[in-house]
Amino acid sequence: MGKKILSFACLAAFFSGSHAAPQLGELAPEFRLQDQNYEWHSLADYKGKWVVLYFYPKADTPGCTTEACEFRDNIFAFDEFNAQVLGVSVDDVASQSEFAEKYHLPFPLLSDSGKNVAREYDVMGMLFASRQSFIIGPDGRIAKHYETVRPAEHTNEVLGDLRVLTAEN
Image (cartoon, rainbow, N blue to C red):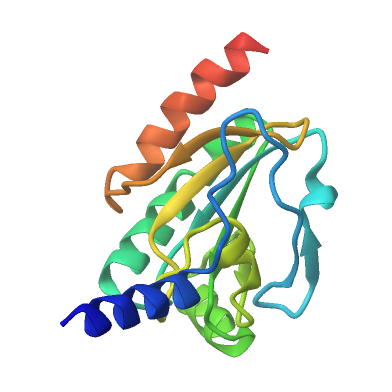
């Protein structure tokens, strides 16, 4: 029995990686990923802007579609806060492209098929990224981390926090 528990713990540690989620006030981990149009994006590209980096498990599944469409339907509100929305999943670029086209998503969907960025942000599960989000400030630091996300309500929650965060700066 003890060996089985130890083996499971070792497997869980292996699959989850050894990174801890970046903490509030820390510099956000840098990344360089391709979007649905095969264009490269890095966090440095958005210096001076707020970034809403949201991780989702799988393109074109019910919760992920709801969340993406909520961001899409409120995209102009994010513009008012000088905020860039970036979706990230471990899906390949082709899957991201189909998802973006099907739902007319006007923001980059980044392919983390190597799962490195999901591990850096400590959102990688056994197979998929967990549904978590980060607001990254114009200075590149973590301003907010959402560990629990309800797809239909998340956009309004993020916009409310951006309202507060931008008023503080």
